[in-house]
Image 1 (tube, each protein chain N blue to C red):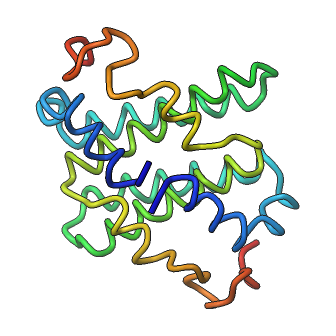
Image 2: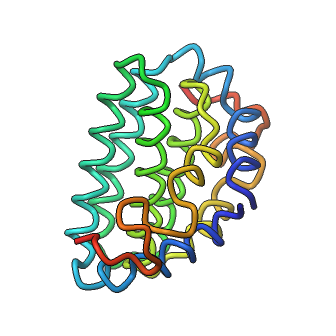
Length: 95
Length: 95
């Protein structure tokens, strides 16, 4: 599924709640989900780990909806098949 | 661009560095980028905000590569056009 199609799915499912909660509240949920992902990385349950990745994707898309950002366009504007810093592929600078 | 295509792009660009850094180090980068996104949400620079969304997407995909998780499959397994909790679309439970 395309990134922007997923963002539209999240809009359809959740925008009525996300927009009421607002940017700060939605960001705080994203932070909570990133923390849960961090804990799942230290466990051995692969299925639970995958669900935490899913939740971070979902809340990032929800936050993009509230912040009126096109997540796919924003992402591909910076990451256009080359490293944005060194302009090489593979990157020669990330550490 | 499809989510899994973006993950493959990140693998091509960064996996040689990401795999050396490992799961914990890559997760710590993701956390840093989420914090930068939080700061950008409180500013008025839309272009800078979009770049922070891009960075969170990029590091989430890098982390999925290191953790050997298919980000698209994981995401769509949980978010399949219905809310995973209440099974409604739009969701009737998220708050």
